[in-house]
Length: 190
Image 1 (cartoon, helix red, strand yellow):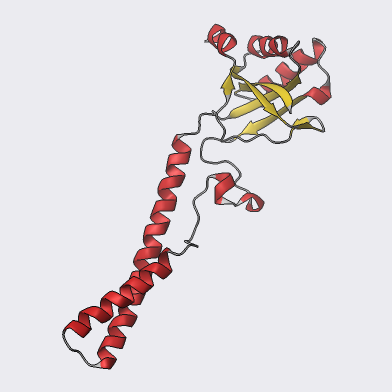
Image 2: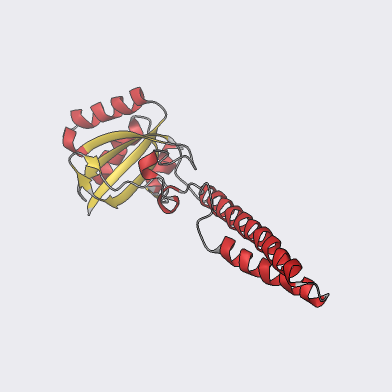
């Protein structure tokens, strides 16, 4: 894992100016990258990234067992009610079918509702602000220098992370993780 220091900027020109200051102070291009972080709840909106577990996006349909469980429960309840009144076999079968249909709808509705509630909770617990992030691959010796340059250039929400740095970029960046702030430098800028 690599040590990474990052700061947030409101515009690409401001982020590019900060990167230029890093280059002027001895950091090399392959150790500096910048990219945009979407607002909370809008991460990974590309079709290839449509996994609810990775993106935080709610599913568009239910794909679990709630509909099946609801159908079975509805069929049993529907048949039991009409059997209690000594209804004929065709009436009991129809009641079971209607109960199964209604039960599956209720089960699916509850599952989708639960998925949307979980998505809402994930969005509320995201702590990373949107903006242009300038990330710098650093070592223990120069991490505070990189953070100070980012702060002087107008960077906010300075953070430290441990991640995979590959081919000049932060390869495993996850915008939904809670950043580890660089406390002292963030307070100086505030």
